[in-house]
Image (cartoon, rainbow, N blue to C red; front, side, top):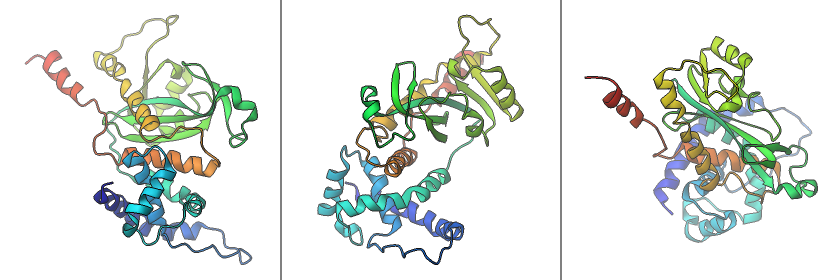
Length: 296
């Protein structure tokens, strides 16, 4: 494990928490009858660093990863607690982790891609006996087939940066979260046919976002600029990002035993991706467009 990477993650997290925690403490409810919170030898910055580093380094099993930290990297931390105790501490990081992820730098390029992916919590045949996500998971359908779980909605730019994300139930229509996801964006939004809607197009265009999708077979053909056609073909960038989130950051697996820890795992996976130096991008299309299509 790269110690420099651990230090880099810790520095970024700690600098954020120095400014964020005083604000968060002011928002907490005050109750004199509340029992004092149990102290811990690990700071919040160290807990968040351990969680994010798990996705960055690429371990496939968190317990093996934590045992590896205890054996070889205990000197980098104040005092690593036992594994069961650390699992209990994970829930404390939920709000700070989400805010830290949202605070990471993102470039508003004016060119965005939108898609949704299924987050399966178990095999659909075991949906009736599943208990952990019984209150929030539902059956849904994608182009691949039926699933039982949740949906992750993503918006990325052409540089491969995740601009915004939202989690919904599995049966939620892909078009419902779009307005909220595009709240602070302006430019062109490229999506698949599942986002076709006249009402949604009108609402977004009023906010400065032009929704561009392919047309269905039963729709009349419409004029589309060549640049938009080329960018629609580059929608694979968001599919590549989703693939990395699921297979490298492991945001989807069936071993969760609590909803808060599932949310932390999801957010830390997205955070780990955001901290990557090299991300899939389509910047080379600009050079291709200039050389091949624009005469000298």
